[in-house]
Length: 376
Image 1: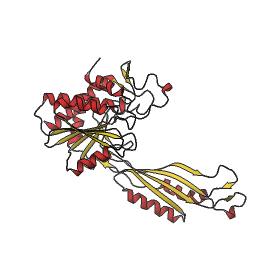
Image 2: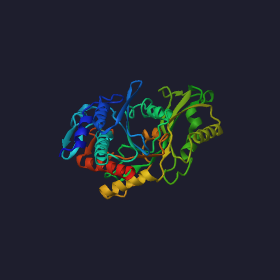
Image 3: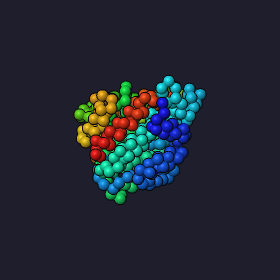
Image 4: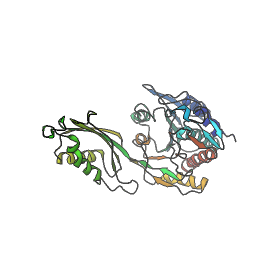
């Protein structure tokens, strides 16, 4: 079975666009949409190519957002097929980016073409925001494009990010927000010494144990209607010289908060410092805010995509805020309604990444139906 979506997905997958490379994927998108009246604006920041496409000047503005970059393949010998040779086998399309998220981009493109051709006088505007820096540092991609749009007062109304959100079947999960991510690097200071003379040393592992226990047991918040409670996890703990007879001079601990809109980053920082100080620790603490939480309450966009999913698949979709961070966190700063929706995510970032071919047309149709609900 050959369809426009399948052909475009295969074309995109065949381009080895490992972060931050684009490999002319964005040129393909621009060329495809130009006959429909889309004006392309290439925005390159440092080594990252970004693309802003827009058709129309009126409101409301509906944006499709996505990324052409993919994660590295990992060991090639572990793949059953070449990751950049899109391969159809038993009704499945294999290749790096098949699920995350070149099939979504292909579906965006065809859905938009079908919609514009069927409704050339639709209301509002359609735009696309495409980056090659989502899987990498995410510092010269979508965030920079959003800053540029904000600086020139270009307002957005709705945004659909094509992240792979579906769980068991296409359409069962839509993301209407994401938790924030706050990282801490904690260094507990002690005094190095011989284990046989502990009175001459201060063991930072012993000193911090009670504080870490309290941090792990603390209820940071109870979440809310859309978010689970904030979680605290220690990801690394390093201390010692490697010798069994040396008390370490310091302990280095890496931890992370995945936090909801029920807490702010500053509140979490203050509570951690209060606990550490209460336990009398001598410490240094460096914070990195990877992303703030964002939330789109039930409104026009979530209702439109839920109806489109129901009409196309018969599934009553679930709104969810689980998972990691995405570029939606940047777009939400300039767009009041941001939703993520895309294919099944079971194989993303894995060896033999794939997508069921029979989900490509329904994916495209859901995007097209959403356009119809909001721009007709």
